[in-house]
Image 1: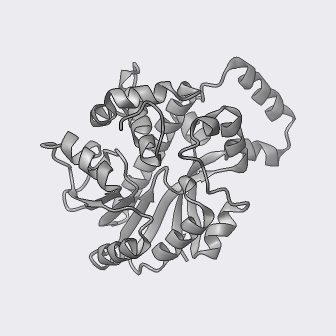
Image 2 (image 1 turned 30 degrees about the vertical axis):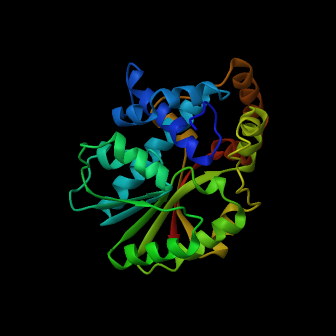
Length: 288
């Protein structure tokens, strides 16, 4: 049944795609994603309309899109020949980005998501060699078989999980990390970082109340320590706030929140200021 709210984690794909497509409506868009607008459709608009703080969500989606695009370009420049997007949702990078025709891009998601995407994008030609795999990532044995096959066929493998691990519990993320760390040809894993302060702000904004069917579950006390225990170290970290400053697109906070942030920043310690700047972003995790 199609609903106007988030009843399953896969519904978040329509929410994100809506805001990716909406970037084109700005006078000076930072990227153009017409296929995202097509995929999101009316359903994406309705889901977005049910959620609080739409302008802030739009900003987050835009910044994270830019950060991951940059990581993809960096990976290709470093000789990565295979990119595996786990929980790909309605991402359109194989069509949107200028990619080498020899690059192998593998999308993995729920069967109903893959089927919808294939139907909607029928006739559209990706810029790379695209493979779409219908698989529930919670099926651990099937996931391991898939990862082993893709790794064996790659020279340099990059895995992307965009907006995925936050919806998994700690045990599930640990199992996924262990699976990825065991891949001989893996050179990197690009995934999100969200600080405890950012999660608390999300709760205050009412997002958790609206997303009871797709709650954030991955909340380790020590994010870096968690991944270190499972074989990964952050080779690089890129934060939403830094990207916003680079492209001159500040977060659209209400004036009361902007005033409060200025006061807090003015009187905060250097460590606290760094905490504000590093509230959320994306990391390139490298296997030890």
